[in-house]
Structure formats: structure tokens, C-alpha cells
Length: 74
Image 1: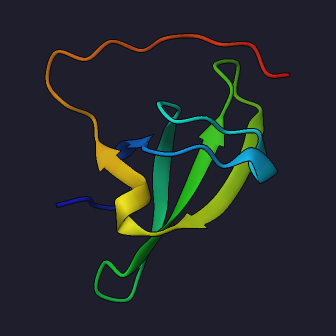
Image 2 (image 1 turned 90 degrees about the vertical axis):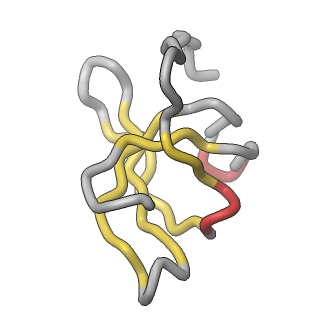
């Protein structure tokens, strides 16, 4: 189960926010009974890129033995 302040992985692109599948964000709010989540995505140097609402199918917990990958914003 996903909780507030958990880091999560985006499972699909959100081009309106310049986010791509695999980007990592932090859950800042849980809507209802986990009907949705407010997730903040930031750069590695702390700049907030987007805070957006997503459905449960659009994020997943970080799995064991995964490694972060860096990409430059367009």
C-alpha cells in the first residue's frame, strides 16, 4: 500500500507536465480511500517540476533492487 511521503514511480508519460514513465515522485496527499494521489516531482537539485493528481494505476511503489536513472528535462 502507498502512503503519504512514499517515493513512487510513474507508470505512464504525463507530457502536459514534461514527465515520463519511470520518473520518481513523492506522494504528498492521498485522495479518499486511495482513489488517487497528489504526487510532487522534483529535480535532483530540489526544483519542483510538478505537483499533480494521478490515479493508482499511474504510479507504483519503488521495487527492491531498482536503481534511479537520470534524464535532462527538455
